[in-house]
Amino acid sequence: MGDLESMAGNLHIYAGVAVWECGDRLTKAEEIMRIHAKRMIQYNHDNGLRNILPHLQLALKLMGSAEDAFMTFCGISEDDFFQQEWHRKGGKTSKLIGHTTRLYLAIMRGDMALAERIYEMGKMYHKGGILFIGSIMRAFLGGLVAFATARYHGDNEKEMIRVAEESISTIKIWAKHSYWNFANKLFLLEAEYWFLNGNEKLARRKFGDSIAAAAKHRFKNEEGLAAQRAAIFHLHYNRKQEASSYLKHAKDCYEQWGATGLVEQIDAAMSEILEGLD
Image (cartoon, rainbow, N blue to C red; front, side, top):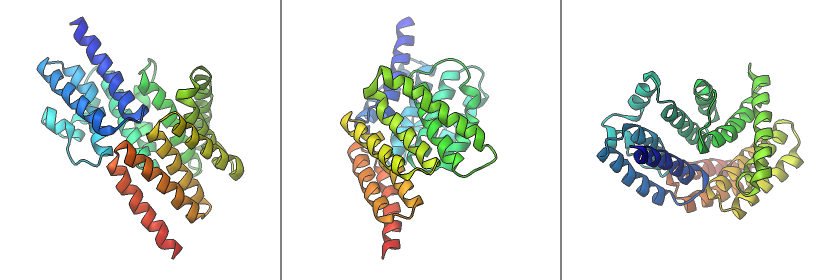
């Protein structure tokens, strides 16, 4: 039993790193996670299955697949699965994983309004404890959501600015210990900071630094994300040609990553921008 518990924990860490951290090909990660999901069923390991399915579902959605991993392996839809999770006693890890994967998908799709709602819903599950790679992504993603939200000057602007600045402080510490893993994340948050504060020169430079660091350290997914956020920055100032160029960069990254679903979304955004240039 101890070995099975360790295996389930290691699978959860692998899945998180493979799908949203390393930028490895999604098709490879999806194939491996599918094999291990089947093994969790064979071993009657419910918690292991609950921990890996959200990552598999995330990979499928990024790839543009219509398959519902929860229906495939549990016989219920994703929405029904998470409804059960939210009302289930215990299972904090699976709740955190489910929340963070949904937050990640909303941000990668550029839907910051949805990301903000997901972020707020998940606060109760992120009090205390550490979720390995999930806690890292929570700090990073939370900062991105907070900066985007603060730009709209809503009722919780001050709180969002506090969250955003806290994210920068946290990741700055991590970057001192592992520059390779955190430099591009730090630069992207700093770019969003200067974007929020109206310093175009520094924001432009930091977006470029984030893209360059992610490319150098082979985080193809986060290189694409930084390029996508840079496009939004330029669109804000009506620089449509530059925005289109950064979207093309993001598309190239997502194609290499295997995120066909994001590629299709970028194509639609580029078409809309190019029409405005005619």
